[in-house]
Length: 120
Image 1: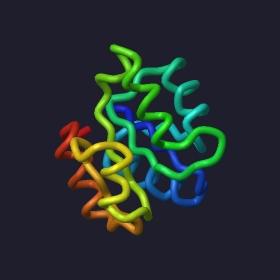
Image 2 (image 1 turned 135 degrees about the vertical axis):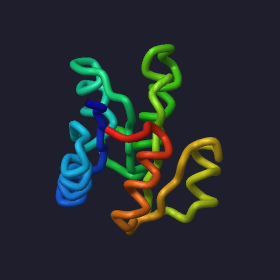
Image 3 (image 1 turned 135 degrees about the horizontal axis):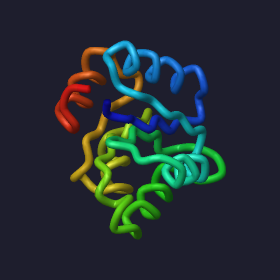
């Protein structure tokens, strides 16, 4: 079973995404900011990270920088999900990441996850 780490400070959104992914057969771990995400990754491996950009404590941008500093964690694929305009988000994180604009449909979310890591 593949594990997805969902990082978003909106608890209801993280829960909703997690529920959709679990219903599809993925294991899900959640975190409300970048610091919690790094703690979760320290405890267990993830096959994919879905992260918001604008969060308290440690933003998604800072999380991506920290992931990139680690050879192991930097290899985990990331989907960036944000209400920020795509051009602004890409200016912050580069255009090499999969980007989903909030609000995202369930179909688009699942398609992106399958595109990046395949079926559960």
